[in-house]
Image 1 (tube, rainbow, N blue to C red):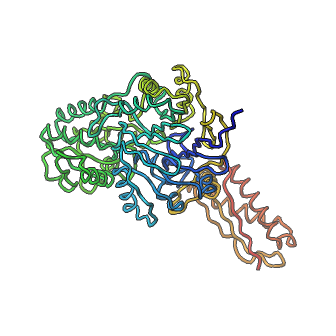
Image 2: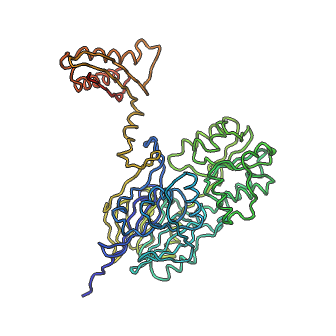
Image 3: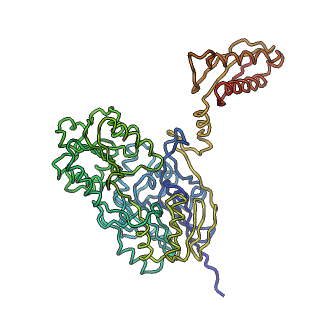
Length: 558
């Protein structure tokens, strides 16, 4: 009778499976009580309106901390923020190596210098096509096309079999400044033995067909730059080096020079040039050269494609940029798409430009941007190359994951696992799904402090943003006599000065009336006075305003 295999291979998503961003996943191999772990990616997502004051959100690594002695390494698929943005915040505590390509390693080092981060990580070079071993795992980086240089899928092999973790990818036959997805190697991996699982990007699983190629975008941008009568300004994702190359080539062909504005663009283009990715591309001019060039001989490449208020295009739109100004008749191209949650900020900038008579061109007007993720036909081609036993859709919200799962079933994949963050999926010896098996969640970066949502105070901030804040302070003695106050502070509530009774006047009357209504003996009890004042002020202001304010009362007994 066969004995059960003591080793298991498991997959645990900690972030990015149920939302866009903060991608982080763990693979474990070995007996249940002695598994060794590798981690793939360590990214962030951006806070929305419901998290006021929060800069970034990242996956809670508590599960990894609980298994820290058995965590061997972190492997980065590429250097987009949603895949590597949390490394310097989370990984130094593990004191384990980080494997990355040259470009990703340079981006991480530049990020550390730019953000003045003290903690560092031990970087180890990862080269496409050169497998390396970490404990029981053998890992090979496979080149894939995406919207940033040196993006990789990972072939993760153990004694139990192989998993293909795609990272972000697409099938672009003509990427700019990079090699296309390595179809030959993926076909070989499929032919070498059916992979246990394909853990695959789901971002565009709702979209039919194939993604447009980057060279189609390049052709459109070249045409728009060539026929512009005056200045052309473009904003795009700073990390899209291929797009930057396309813009530079189009500018040169049109007899224009490129002026660059924005720290992120300067930082990434410097890295790309040092690594030989901008060979043949003329050096970019700094923004101070803007005023020295004729109006029809300039292309401005600037940051701010996501509506960031301090980025170059936003400052230009507000007329606040120290070196660059656009005029009516100039052309601005948004060679990007708005990440969900950023739409309003991007539209506001576009409206400012339009109001000044500046022509604004977006992806609604033509092919000025293309995705870096696979559509349905591309997904099906990858299925055919690899023929995986199991599909695990990742990198997407629920609607993307479910659409991807349905496509995999339709295409004949035997096992399709509907995983979410915190689930554990056993891939060997057989496929089992354990929902909610491990602790997961979010951490907020609030200024310099990394904290849980409960620790962050965001709930109270939301309440303050809705109801404002009234503070009342009063001093009473042991006999219940009011010896000082009441003093008041009102913030975030409407103050109608020409009203018959202002809010300040109303609150003062309510406080004085309530104090008089409390018998002197009871007034000597601070808790009684605090509760009475809080209740009466909140109630009277609600009757006047139609909303309940936040009320804090300090009663000092002297």
